[in-house]
Amino acid sequence: MAEEALAAVTGFLHKLLTGRWLMLFASLIIMAMNGSGYMFGLYSNHIKSVFGYDQSTLNLISFFKDLGANLGVVSGLLYEVAPPWLVLSVGAILNFFGYFMLWLAVSGRTAAPGLRLMCVYMSVAANSLSFGNTAALVTCLRNFPLHRGCLLGLLKGYIGLSGAIMTQLYHAMYGEDNPEGLILMIAWLPSAISLASLPFIRLINSNNNQRNDLKPFYNLLYISLALAASLLAIIIPQTKTHFSKTDYIAVASPIVLFLLLPLAVVVNQELTLHNHPPPITSILVQSPSPQLTTMSRSSNWYKNIFTGRPMLGDDHTILQAILSVDMAILFVVTTCGVGGALTVVDNVAQIGASLDYPTRSISSFVSLMSIWNFLGRVMAGYVSEFLLIKYRLPRPLMLTFVILLSCIGHIMIAFGVPNSLYFASIITGFCLGAQLPLTATIISDLFGLKHYSTLYNVGSVSSPVGSYIFNVRLAGRIYDREGERQRNVMRNVCKGVRCYRVSFIIIIGACVFGSLVSVILVLRTRNFYKDDIYARFRKGEEIKSPLQDTTTTTTTFSLSHLQVATMKPLKCITFTS
Image 1 (cartoon, rainbow, N blue to C red):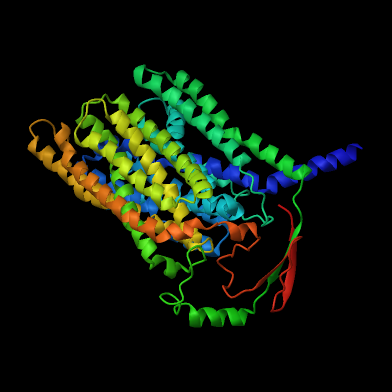
Image 2: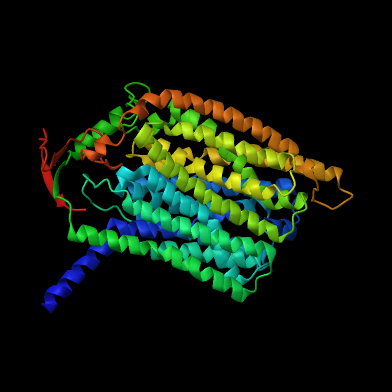
């Protein structure tokens, strides 16, 4: 009896440790530590003062941060040919190297680097984020193909919260005013979390006829909302009173508990699957001839780029998707919408200083943007999924409304409405957060999942383009020009609403233009979204690997139907989820 009980417990623990739900929990923790790019405002003024940079130079460094964070094509291509753990390992190494070298430079432990080297450090550090995002997010999407909107909203929501989470952890470890300690923490903590998660981030064979059960995802959503509410409850008193290090440790403790609470959902879900396993499915997978596959790829890869294009929702090749009209529209829309929001994120310290907000408020602005960034991400994911399933409303329509909403925050900054930067931070964080999962989900909807690891990162390239246009070329130059006019006041510092007014009026116009372009995508995809875009996954259709040839025929045997393959040899794989 005892041996049977021990065997049952051992079997359950094995399923728990090797199951896709624990993989999802590990991905959430990785995402919660993977938003260091949103914390630039906490230490940007320190970099500016240590090296004597003007605002244009600082904005150039922030552009390379955005470029590195969103230039994830390399991580996507690596994911096409390498296992997820290797992608995650590369990200951990890049993160530690980039931020550790930045810490050495800022703390004076090495000679002051030139501007180019500073840009390289920042770009390498930020580029590490794309490796973590790709390894965790794409793997989750392949393991849970029926819940794309909810899953993307949840995972990207944790990235949005990571700025506020890591700010509280930084205060608990290093105190209140220690930007060098912050940079050091960003160097080692995310890297350590990624390395600890290596055994769990992997593709897991599961029953393609998956249960369409949203309950565990909603439970995870409720936990994340409670985490956001606790962060908000902590931030409000921090803007009013001084906290000691002991106080910061006390308030950081419940944050850590909320981060671990999704484990309860994971264990409960695995217990349910253990006690009530789904029907066993056998999949007969064709093993194509290597010679035939090589010949097919070498002779036909370029012929269907412009002709024979797949239908929306079918798997596109990388070039078919990149060169499509729909991808071009998405690029223009996100360049305008995300580029304007990133300008606020990267300049929030300087905007606050120019409008005479107290220094301690800068941390509050960053945390508010982080929390509402999270809310934007999860709401965009869950709400767009609800509207799609219940009313067949196209996701690009929600993207259009989000970009228009962001104009309200930009108007508050442009005209310097008193005490409005708190509200502008909320609106900007929400809209930036909502745009990112919507864009990522639209790409998976329109172009399929086969090459999603690359296409997801291709879609992110628009963010640094928008950042360079609106942040470096526009906001930074106008700030410095106004600062030159006020040179008798203080070097490299601009005061007053004129510092950013013209910049944000132009950004408002760009966002309106982007929303109008987004309407074109709504019209182009409205018929596609009227159909059931998840039907193929409910019927047990295989999610093709990037390494699998597109001409491969798959035979699936289930309780409901039998499809017979036409080519040999065949091999049988039997598994349960």
